[in-house]
Structures are given as C-alpha cells and as structure tokens.
Image (cartoon, rainbow over all chains, first blue to last red; front, top):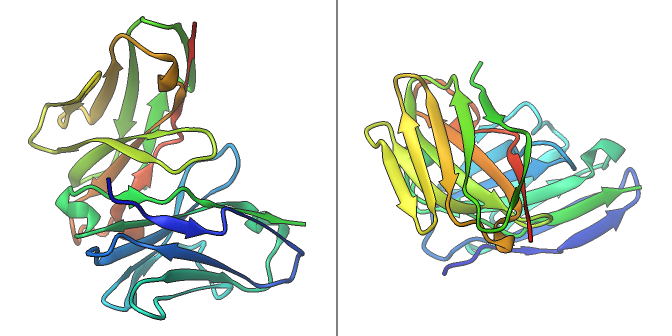
Amino acid sequence: EPEVTQTPSHQVTQMGQEVILRCVPISNHLYFYWYRQILGQKVEFLVSFYNNEISEKSEIFDDQFSVERPDGSNFTLKIRSTKLEDSAMYFCASGDSGFQIGNTIYFGEGSWLTVV
Amino acid sequence: KNQVEQSPQSLIILEGKNCTLQCNYTVSPFSNLRWYKQDTGRGPVSLTIMTFSENTKSNGRYTATLDADTKQSSLHITASQLSDSASYICVVSPQWGSGGGADGLTFGKGTHLIIQP
C-alpha cells in the first residue's frame, strides 16, 4: 500500500513562532493537498497544489500560510506567527489526478500542532 | 453552500452486529462520494469511492450505497469487529469547474462508531 509520510508527528510551538510541516507524497502523484482538523471538528481544506503552484485555497489559507515543493519530493506547509487557534492536526494528501476524477486520494498520518 | 450532513453523530453497537451510517449532501452538480475511516489520531483511509452513476460499492464488510436523486448515501458495516471502532467520514466532490470551491471536497463531521465486545 503506498504511503504519504508526514513529519513531525507532533510539534509544540510557542505562539508567534514559525513552524514547517513536511510531507512526502506518493512518488508518482501530481496533486497535493493540505487539510487540517481541529480537535473534535471536521476535516477542513486548506490548499491544493499542482504543477508547482497553488491551484486552489480556502479562506483559512491566508497570508500566514504558505506551501512549497522545494525539491520535487517534499511538500511543505509553513505557518508563520502561529496563533493558539492554529492548534490542530494537519493532514497532507496526494493523488495521481484531481478529486473530480474519482481516484483514490491518500492521506498521511497527520502532524499534531500544539501552539502554547 | 455545499454541505454534508452525517447521522448519527455517534453509535455504539455490540461486536458482530450490523450497522448503517447515513450521509446527506447538498453538493451539486455532483461528481463522486467517498467514505473514509479515521482511527483516533490517525489520517483518513479510503473505504469506497462512488461516482454519480454508481448505486452501490463494496469493500469487504463495508457496503456503500448512493442515491444521487435524493442526495443520500449510506455505509453499511456487516459483522462488526472491534477494529471497526473509528470515525466514518462522508466526503463529496462536485464536478470539475462547477465552482464548488476548495478544490471540490466537502467533508462531513463523521459518525463516531464504537464497537463493544
């Protein structure tokens, strides 16, 4: 079974600090996503990435957030000046085509971010 | 606004029993509907994917049904096992370019299923 891997599994950071969450999507996939899930709430879309650029982003994904695919394998989410409300599980996902095609999208195990 | 509503919010059943989880959606036009299983603290794992033309899809003890006319889906679990304890999330995608927003995926809040021995 192919895997999307995420690091770190858990990070605690002080309010105002910057964090970088890393993801290694499945190797032949072209579409990459970040989602977040606040404890006890539903999964929320943050951003999708295709062909080395953002294809769509949600209202949550403001100037505080950025994504990058620095080396052709990693896919990172940077959160600048973290706030308490950024505490959540962040999921990376990847697929070989867009969601509308009906293909399987694979999620990573998530990165727990706790902002104190 | 696209919405996905799931019921019940939580469910407790005895091991070996069957159960059915419900999903109603307002996403239109519709492309596909997915059911995911999410263990506590883990990432969602895909169970089934159905396009608008499919009525049913099985994956082992999991059987999903879809009625695109009434915009309802169900996930039926037979002969439940302790390992089935998890949240089951319904996720709906609109057709490409339909302006569904957020790359098309709308997540439900999930049904929290607990299997008791």
